[in-house]
Length: 452
Picture 1 (cartoon, rainbow, N blue to C red):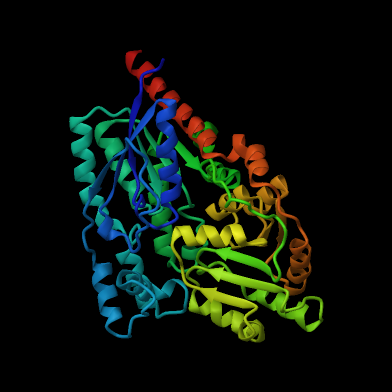
Picture 2: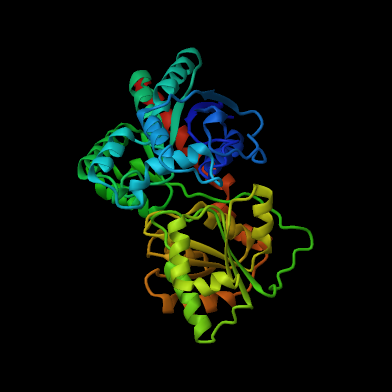
């Protein structure tokens, strides 16, 4: 049997962080040891996460090293901004202050502020983690034998840590891009030109030094291969997100509810739009194609006030009657209950063409039909491949409304059957097996070169 390999896994988000980014890393940690790879986690202390979720447990046997994260001038600027207007009581202070400081990312702001924020957030707002992580990572690599490093982003600071440790200790390094660094719609339009060029140079430095670059959609892999045509194509691979085994509640009934329950689980933020969807519902109701008492649409999770305002402008009457509702985030157990009780699951992807939201795989595992609104890209491709629902473009309310009616009529499938059908492609155990295979090939390849 092959010897167990040990990797240093650098990730800012890890349980008990409530950020969705923790899922991919935590799930890999659960299954990688099964395939001969033992991860050691390098992350931040729990106090640096805005929200904690203690129901999502760290897999047993995983050692976690948690460091401090230094305050940065961006933090000071955020504190100054927070004193200029009252905080939203529904948000943590950290969440409110950073959002206030970075308002330029979603609304027009003076040019000087845009440049200032771009300077203070190089490569992102978490750069205060770089030096503590470098110290901890260096200590681990000097005092314990590791076979490889794996860093995962966002935030991009994790890759800069991986890059520095790779150069200093000459150890194989895998860079995992959960989201793109450059073609990220929420940042691309907000950063000035000089900052976009700097981001491109930082990404290029990481990509050229990494021994393997992992993308989480085939479309993003294609973008990276096109951008770095001078690098071998085999350097870029795709490892999607996935689902884990989840059983539905006992005596789960696949029969539809009255009224029909439509659920969007998670945040709606800049770059994703719901205005045309709400306008489409309003058109259906006005034309008497849809009984407003027969359908309930719930947005469960933080939603930007600008998005809610756009919905009210397009379909204020549906919000007044309760057909469309917005609720704040609930804990994981309560969210799962809403998920299993829904008749139709909603995704709003916006302009994030090369990405597939993690919620798609969680939705997929339930067997519930999915209605996805967004630009054509990786999400529309996987919707067509899996045939689990209806996808529609985001620009035309009437078309959205007509496709929504089709989605409402789709039946639910057995969760057990759908998970069995897609386990080889999307189950995290299968994905972890592939990741372990790449790690072993990378390590064995370097050892062969060193011996030669």
